Picture 1 (cartoon, rainbow, N blue to C red):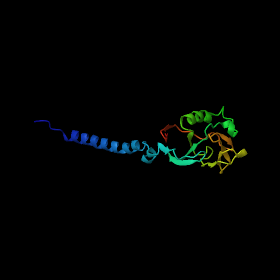
Picture 2: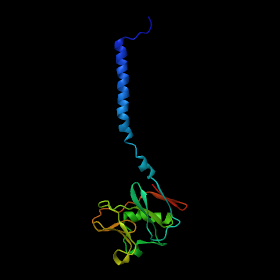
Picture 3: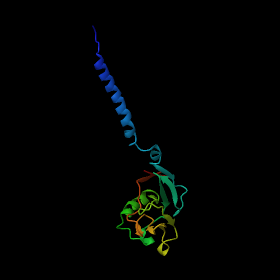
Picture 4: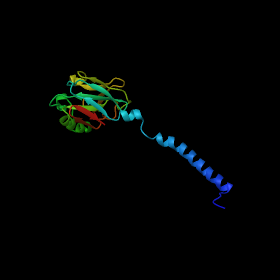
Length: 172
């Protein structure tokens, strides 16, 4: 007679196939939503040409939806010249080797660690004329290397992973 399938088996298999298709179509959007957004991926690496950057002039570019502060420091920059106590600073321990490797250019995430405001670069501001990042919202003050020195910010500004390739600073 051949390989005749009973109506019951046929309907059982058809139901399983339909259920499988339904399960895949329900699970796929949930799994796909876990992947990073295309716009975020496009900003996951920031590149900046430092050839036109002047000393102590702040350049700002977008990085992962946040401002990235890029600055060139004077040759022979040391925190002692600026009135800072950086030897015990976590940020300066990250910052110092970057200065040597990157032609005195360093990038810092420009978001206040208190409430997420954007600090302002005060080249001639701060105490004793020492340059600082100043957050006007609640009075947070950061050193040029990102240490929090006054106001409510609980931690220093973040220094992201970065490297210099030729005259291009690559962050991310």
